[in-house]
Length: 426
Ligand SMILES: *Cc1c(COP(=O)(O)O)cnc(C)c1O
Image (cartoon, rainbow, N blue to C red):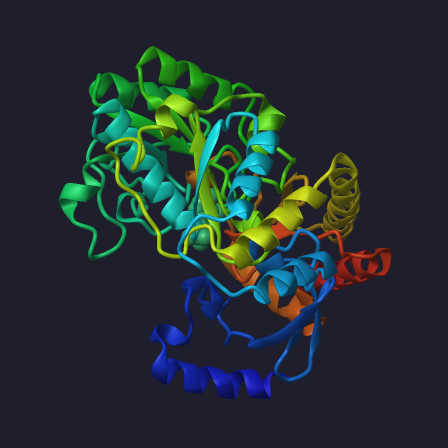
């Protein structure tokens, strides 16, 4: 069934580290070989062996309208005829800036980059330059891309001195990153008190999507805003995953909290490599060439990527989000029913079209320490059974499903039928 994929993986492993260009693609945490894909269309994705899957990953979020969305493809085609890049200003960059500013409540000015990682790295440099302070506070289990400052999570003793997760991140860099616990305001205030007047920013995923889906508790985000004001530091919302995904204006619209800086990625490029960061004018004006904080990019604002991005953003109206909610609610309700009927120890966390099925005997998962106690072996079994039945899920317990508007009622039925069988098999 997966013969060609297996052969291709043997080849790629000889030439590419681990055979993949991003680690999660190697399927390590579900203990099988990765699938190689060759095309996508609407809700479906096809592998090199010719197997068809209903896609519940959507390239980790960007494909909100499904694969090969006609409007996106035609806008790229149109732009392509005029060349691929100029390395100089274009009108489409102003247009996408206008569109982003219109959609995201806290953004007054915005700078385009090429990935979410670039956006978060640049955002903390800007925060440090603007505040003239060094430390940042991040939350264990929150992912902000692979910038050195972010590859640090909490371990015992890490509450004051961050310890690097990855070799190559120096202790000197790690020590400037302080780790707090998600949904725990006291853990944040403790750090702010300890490093009084030395913290540049608190960076947070307003809805955490990188330890499986973990929602902010009531008043957590409002509390962070208050703390940032009280201790005179900036609040950065990393909305690379949630921006244009959970609502037109991202999580900040839903929870009604205004961060100082917002980072964006994924949906913003319509499937092309794009990131962005934006915020209050007086902060953004600190960037070169107006201000002293340097940040640049040869291909930033690339015309193909900008055309794809603006096409997707312009299509995101309230109706779209209602439909997306409808699709996702049907799926999560069906799964909850299956969990009950099969007596499975599992819970579902969901906001809009982001969802995680956690295999756990707990009733809630609110932070990293709770998330890591899930039964990853059960997830691996579940993943494989679903894959064999033509449902493509994220190959890790600690990633979200992203549903697209392309999912039909018959797709949903198939997902739920497979889900019941897979749960029975555990
Ligand atoms: C995916 C993600 C990033 C990193 O974006 P890349 O485009 O993969 O570099 C950063 N922050 C969050 C919250 C993400 O989900």
